[in-house]
Every structure is written in structure tokens, then in C-alpha cells.
Image (cartoon, rainbow, N blue to C red; front, side):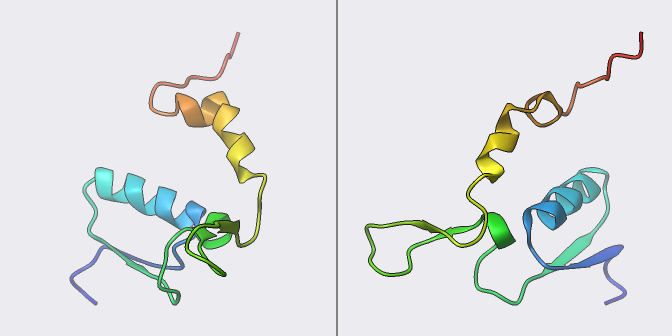
Length: 81
């Protein structure tokens, strides 16, 4: 484990985002997840039939995409005036 700067447990959307920024900053990151898929509560899976997709937990996380903190995160500066 000494080959990594950061070890994160759980591949939910918060961990994925955090690990992405740590990796972008040059850190060597190991992300561990107990399930066979990433995304945690915002993952969509085909459970019953191959045609239908189901939100496993939250169905409203998609609304966060309208937030300017998310859509323009790299260049977002809050209004301090």
C-alpha cells in the first residue's frame, strides 16, 4: 500500500470526484469498491431485464448538473462583490 499517496474506500460520486482531482493534482490514488460497479447511490443498473435501467438509490442527482459549480467547476469563481 505504500505505492499510493491516497487510498479511498467506496466508489460513490463523492469519492470518484475527489479521487479524480487528486489524480489530476499528481497524486497516486487507489480507489476500492465492494460492488462490481462504480457510482454508489447514483448508479444505474439493468436489474430485471437487459432493456430496462433502474436508479438504485437516488433519482434526483441528475438535477445537480444545472448547478454552475458543477457545469463550470474548472473556471468557477464565486461572486465576491
